[in-house]
Length: 253
Image (cartoon, rainbow, N blue to C red; front, side, top):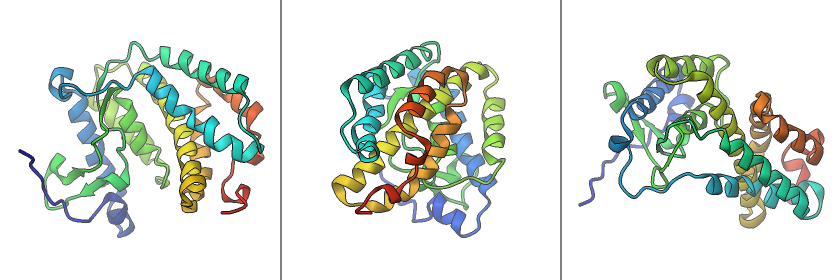
C-alpha cells in the first residue's frame, strides 16, 4: 500500500518569494530535524536503508576533480592530484566516527520543503525528495538547509537556527557536531560544484553555473575550520581564486 498526499505547490522558495517570514519557515524546518534526530535510530531509520559511508562521500566529492577542475585548468585532473584530494577526504571523514548516525533525508533545502501555513507545528513543513535518504550524520540535513546552493539566507538567520537546533538537543556534543558540519558542508559544496558543472557540460543546463560563485563562497567559509586546513591548502594550490567564479569560464555558457 502506498499512501500519498497532495501538499499543494507552495514550496519554501515560493513562500519566501511571496514575503513569508524566513525566520518562521526555517524554524519549522529545523524543528522537523530536531524531531527526527532526538529519536533512537531504531525508530527513525527504516530497515534496509543504505549507509552514507566514507566511500560514498568520497566518491561524491570527486565530482569536483572529475567535472569542475577540467573546465578551469583546461585538461583532466592529474591522477596524483586526484589521489591527494581523495586521501584528504578519507582522513577528514575519519574524524566523524564518534558522531552518532541517524536518518539523513539528504536533499533538505528550500526547494524541497512545502509550506503548509494552515497546519500547526511540525505539520506546517511538508517534505519532498527524500527517496535517496540514507543513514548518516545528523548535521548533514541541517547544513543542507542553512547553506543552500540556490539561495542566500538573511544574515543572522543561520546562526539563530543553529542555536535553536543545538538548544533543543542538549545531549549533543556541539563542538563535535560543528566539526562534522564543517566537513560535510565542504564535501557537499565540492560535490555540488561538480554536479552543476556536469549539468552544464553534459546536459546543456547552463543556468546552474550561476550558482557556482555562491557555492564557492560557502566552501571557502567551511574551509576556515581548522580541521579543513589540508583541503584549503589543496584548493588554494589547484584552483586559484580567479578560477572560482562561474559562467565566464565556460565559453558556451
